[in-house]
Length: 257
Length: 319
Figure (cartoon, each protein chain N blue to C red):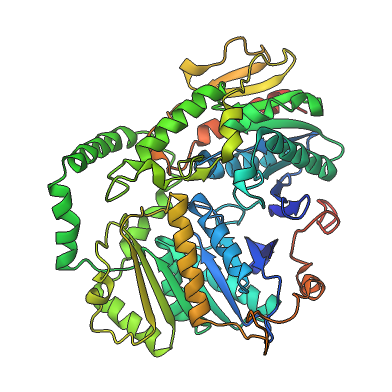
């Protein structure tokens, strides 16, 4: 089956969506909206998100991926991004998925900051199932780490012939991506916090970073490898983790119709 | 300027985004820019470079397509036993075919970074429709002077030694982590680097076909360390006025800094305008291209393949 891509929304800020139809005979009554990470991690995880969507489609879960406005192939100026805009985009994408699959309940899958954002809109869609792939639990920790990573990248003499000055990068630019004047501050105020105890699905994470008080219905899947998010030498390394993809897919299949 | 998602190729296996200008030149769209992806990076390009470049090209009047080669992003893999680079060449030619069929384009400018530049180079050699080639950190030969420029500063800089040691330490730690084999198919990219004599004859062939070349190298390319290196390496090719070379010594290979990407996009845009001027409306004080883009006409021809806003999408089970 072919992935169907389209633009939705108002001119000037349309977002790019890619719909993965189920590829087999089985068609489930749950569809999945995948929320990608922000910043340079979007590029590192693009393939992983495609593979997850394909894996879900192979066992009957329709799936939709999208690019937030100002990122990837979507329209819009990244300098204008804030949390409200990102959440609006998630809702718009979820509504698009609902339009395509009106008979299904929507589950959310989020990777890194995508998980952090997705958890803010679960109640809007009566979401009962989630997949969180190496989620950012605390926005402040993420912003601190990406600030440090950016400083390391511009001084990396394996990358640049000469160190680059902070003044050569935009004020809100972090590791190749402009976060805009508001987004970093707003991100630092977000937490995943306590999840609804009735949620079911899975969290794939490092064994040492499993969230406390995760609902009993969320299977904790230990990741078999470290992704090196804070390593300046790995900022362009694609995430390739078929084991995690399989485990997350099977976890959802075990709890969602 | 507007972006349209589309599928094309045999069995519609390829996915792309066409950035279309707001205005149509008087002689129609005879020329289009095509961005070719590199490695596992999807069509937006590293840090959105392809998106920015295609939109910039469309804003100045050139339709521009960025697409995923087979097996990358939203494109299905090509069912063949060909090497990945040969498959990418075939995919690119199908992209040209699609633009010719749908927009009437007869000529193309190919652009790519690294392995994308190599694919663009190979397609340019095979396909007479290619009139321009933008190679970002593409093929180049190391000259003697390269080694002076490249290694002397490094030997004298203790920070370089520090970072080199760290990079080798990190690489040893990382080598054990991926046993999936998913990335094995990319290893051949390094095996197919042509030698200097082959490249000389290839560039000569492109020049004889009047293909315009823009070779851009970054300080982070690893194979180019001074501005004159490309011309020196291929001094036995008579490029005439068909070659422009740019060297950004301060940039890394991926143009990670936004300011570097903006400078690159400006360079390529100016090169397009200089070497591939659009037909202009006589008497227009701004020298703009003529009449508004006939969206309805082109949309009608593209609608059977374009996945646009709600209402035109094929429903599962009803195809």
